[in-house]
Length: 307
Ligand SMILES: Nc1ncnc2c1ncn2[C@@H]1O[C@H](COP(=O)(O)OP(=O)(O)OP(=O)(O)O)[C@@H](O)[C@H]1O
Ligand SMILES: [Mg+2]
Image (cartoon, rainbow, N blue to C red):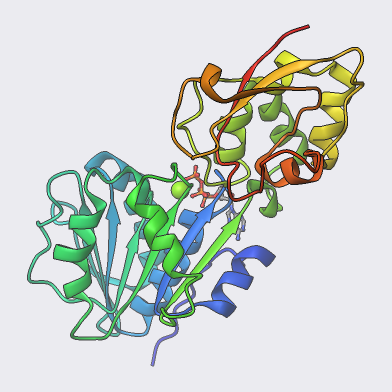
């Protein structure tokens, strides 16, 4: 029996953590350049080499291109047949790789059955809910196949957040979710991440590099810290992510909080407050005893600066 040698990158430690903890349905909400696509290819290749039918889904035909080329290259020694037009590879051992674009309704692959489906950049799929529920999930039924959702978070309203939440829901034992920053990829230079932080807004950096599920709802009030904090304290807060008292005499501010969690005008519920909190979590620590505030109440923070 002839032997074939394939060379795949060894998963980095964070990727290995995911592989070790994988369940049937896996959601990776990780920072840009974390290695999501690399991990997805690894998972797909392992299954295809074991003789199973596998599928790769991308948001657009154009986005398939790079992955198609890389898979062709890596799998070259074991490809028995290849259709560029259908984006299909047949492998020694009977495994297959098929690639689909989800830029239509995601229905093109109907009627297929797979043992593994990888959905790369799934937050960019126009109607992910439909594509998953009506198209891809049924394709996994014959083989009780697994699925990999790969993306960087894209706001709390997107369907990806609901899928992510299944992975942390004890009542959905088939699901697993991970959330890891770009810095978990040892092949990305930390100084480059720091440089990006300087070039981006806080929210954008938190989403793209820290893989945070940020709310863009209150984003109309941007750069709050820059507006109200002296530089040295601002840097300190960023570094430690701790609640801080400000120099109250020098930096009085007016802050309006939407206690009810609705977007009421700031003037209707605003308090004169001499400290500033960096986040809802730190608000409780900063609030005086007589303020009607709890972390649960404090969902949105609107500020008006005043010196
Ligand atoms: N295990 C690994 N070994 C070596 N290099 C890796 C590994 N995983 C990822 N990389 C490298 O890290 C970089 C980012 O990987 P990849 O494109 O998979 O990340 P991504 O999270 O999909 O990025 P994007 O957010 O841009 O889609 C690439 O240069 C890739 O080759
Ligand atoms: Mg990618």
